[in-house]
Length: 99
Image 1 (cartoon, one colour):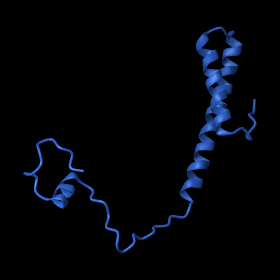
Image 2 (tube, helix red, strand yellow):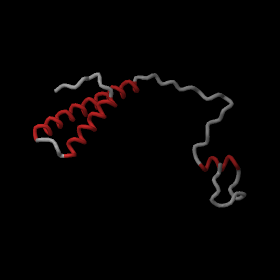
Image 3 (cartoon, one colour):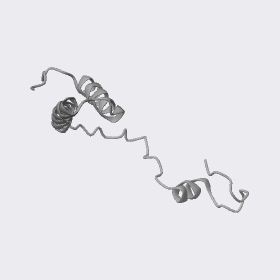
């Protein structure tokens, strides 16, 4: 059985989920269960292909780093930097959030 490759990732994932649920119910005959496993593998492979295509599309997007305006300082990355920026720690109660 060959799946329709025009299925979206979401459609293939929904079909894979439905296939797995039918297998988990245990109501399929042996032949139907074997066919469901084969169908599930095809849906899984289609999902993996779609994800790989999406990854490649994302990686091929141009990356633009826009410089910060000269008057804008970068945000302090740590609590210690925030404390240093606001002054000494003694004037604040213990456990106070520094921002």
